[in-house]
Each structure stands twice: as C-alpha cells, then as structure tokens.
Length: 366
Image (tube, rainbow, N blue to C red; front, side):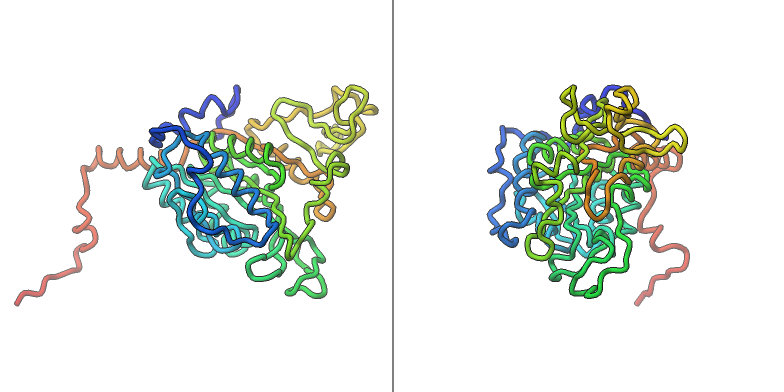
C-alpha cells in the first residue's frame, strides 16, 4: 500500500540522496557538459532538455562519478554522450532493465533513464511498466515527440490516430498511448508531465523527481522540427496555452483558462456528482467551492488517472502538466537488500561455485 505524503516530498530529499556521495566542491552547469559535439538537428527540442538537465544537476550536490544516465535507442538516447557523468547507450527498449540492475547493485548511484516514445512504449513497453510497478529508485525521462525521429518519420505509439507518415501514408489506424495514463495504470509512485520549451517548469519537475524515493516517470513533450514540427504548438503559443494547459499544483484548485473576476482561471475541473467523472466547467457558473483541489499525494491513483484523460488527443486542449502523482511505497532495491541480509542471517553465506556446479558435475583427471 502506498504511504501518503502529508507534508510534501521536500521532507524526503535528504533520504532520497543520503546514500549517494556528495560533491567535494561547488559545481556549475559547465561541470556537467561533456567534450562531445552535440549532434541533434538544429532546432530540436532535445537541446532545451539537455540544457535544463545540465543546469539542474549542480543542485543535487552529488559527485559526478556517482550519477549515471542510461539510454536506449533513438534521438534522445544520445543523451549520455553529452553529460559529463557515467552513462550507457544501451539497446532498444531495454534501458529500464539495465538501469534496474545498476540501481539494485549500486545504491550509491543516482540513476537516470533517458528514452523516447518509440523506445519506451513500443519495443520497451514491457520493460517500462515493470520498472514502474517495482518502484526501483530510477528517474525516467520520456521524451515524447509523437514520431520516430531517428528512423526518419514513421508513426510512433503516441502518434494521433489518422497520422500521415512514411509508414502510414493513408493515416495511422492505431490508437495512441497516453504515457502518463499508462504509468498511473502501472501504479507508478511518481508521474509528471512537462514541456521542453518551459525551462522553469521543466526544472521544477526534475527537482521533484530527484527528490522522490522510487521510480519517477517524467513525460517531456519535445518538438521534432524535422518530422513532426509544431506537434505541441497549442501548449506553447501564449494565447492558446491559457485555454489548452492545465497547470497542476498540489493543494491548489485546478483552474485554467483566461482570468476570471478573481484573477484565477475562468475554467475549472469538477467531479460530476452523478457519474463521479471529472469534467470542465465555467467557474463563474459552478462556483469556486465546486472546483477540485489537486492532491498529488492521494493514495489512490484514480483521480490522477482521470486528470490524465482530460486532454483531447488531437488538439491537446485541456492537457494537464505538472506532478500528477507523488506517493511513497517501499523501494525495490532496499527491500531486496533486506531480504538478502535476512537470508544470510538465517542460512549463512552461500557458496557460488557449489551452486553453479550442483550435483551433476564431475572433474576429469589425467
């Protein structure tokens, strides 16, 4: 059962980072830039995410040698080359599994996974959901550009239905995944969404993810200006964004849209008393008391899941961004370590050579 946070995740920052050695000297963004040439297409949203992560890393106060980025395959998966930390450019879809082994074996590391919508949700879908449900101490950054960029523009698991691409010239017949909904359905303990071009918001979400104990999934809407340019324009255009974006803040009423008489958003999210479902209303008509207050620490993921379903999959209007869920549950590797220690106490240390040899081996002499 999830343990509800009553005073916010900041209380657990020291615990989250307690096992990772601290940096001996003050660090800057420059310390986390590698000497590798950044090779993404000019204008790619990955640049903004890279800059935000490099700028945020010094806040952790951790030794660079105790931070590791693991990626799979895709444009975003070049990320480890550009971070002056340890890293691994692994195989398609398997980054969560490799990172799980690393985090389980080395609790003194801060382990980050960088993946894309194709890498994570197609061939890697199985690995992703099991990392989430196990609650391994990983931070997963899922770059979602709703297209396959590295292989030149095929539709991906998050492309909208009817999407015209090189692999779907008559329109995609697939229904897209909603990564946030998927993560909540897998009982992830931390789920958030942000946008590549909103540096302040992106950094605040990264900070919350880093503070979290367990698996934190952050979906980042990221623009591919070559094969899917403007996919998230509704969320970035200043005029449209007021009507399109629902900014979630724990403990605050869920309101958005043009300012009403009280200066807050004129539209709000309420729970329909008849059906129990969430719906959008004009606050002036429904009343401020009817507006739902966001509780990111609610034990049940039900309301967070309902919030994740408000967005129109085609226009992206009513898209919630921010932390949808942040709860506590036992962390997998600590439970595993405890189990191993109890086994040694009860049975003593095992002999690996004897275990591997078993009873059906023999030695050839002479």
